[in-house]
Image (tube, rainbow, N blue to C red):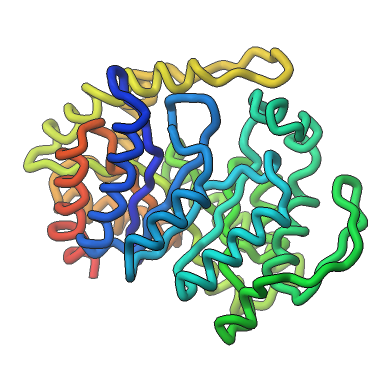
Amino acid sequence: MRVGSFVLAAQFPGQGEGEALHRAVRSAEVSEEAGLDTVWLAEHHFVPYGTCPSAVTLAALLLGRTRRLRVGTAVSVLPTVHPVALGEQAALLHVTSGGRFSLGVGRGGPWVDLEVFGAGLDAYENGFPESLDLLVRWLREPSVGADGERYRFREVPVVPRPSESLNETEGPEVVVACTSPASVRLAAERGLPMLLGMHIGDEEKAEMVALWHSHARASGRPAGEVHRAAHVSAGVCQIADRRTDAAEALMKAMPGWLKQGLEAHVTVDGRRRQMRDPLAYAELLCGLHPVGTPRLCADRLAATSERTGISRFALLVEGSGDLAATEENVRRLGAEVLPQLS
């Protein structure tokens, strides 16, 4: 089991963007000090829900500041960027970090981002499979050309070529955020592990893992590849000497952040979106994930792994909104929870 932190660079009410980003960087640095496996970085545009607009840029900073920690994006929004440009950045980070970079990608949402970056709604609704395939080819092959609906260009060499640089058969791993049966099938048919969201519980995650295995086998993926697939479960983690104290720390801060963050999303085509109730959502997260004593948190992580078959965790540790509390939370996760999972 590999446990990492999930960093949104969340801007809580009353905080500035710089404060949110500083807490994000510090929580990642402390994650390495505490012995965590990975830090996963979220990407959002134009909203205080998350103030990091480029997960690969923040990943580059953190890879330069750490020596052991794996750094991944959770996720880079593929419809708003050219897949070759993202592939070049991923290859560069993979090579220069000695293979410590993981590229998580997702479809994002029907947000105004699509208008600002010129991608259009079709990139979100129909273009993700083509973009994903082009991205994966760029990270696996020595040269790439394209003749698709969205991307067409002559064959060009891949520079830097990630697999050749590190004497590997493949470049950086690619993880796909999955929220529906269609996205599960998309990832499975390509043999790519999934990132599953923190809004769903063990039962639904187990169903998605089983569906992934079914589609992967049906599409002829090698049995060893299917068996080794290391999916990632996103969640929330807050540690205290009593469960009530851990939950209280989150319930004081998270509803306000969720309210202002979720309400700030603007759709590209004016469609109405039903946003989650912030208080109910915070309560749901406290109930689904490791929130409580170190023993309870360890038991919850072990139970999720056993029920779902998921071996990697990306845990939101900044839910209190406070820098000092976040650092303490990460250190307790490393010192008091991880030893119980080994």
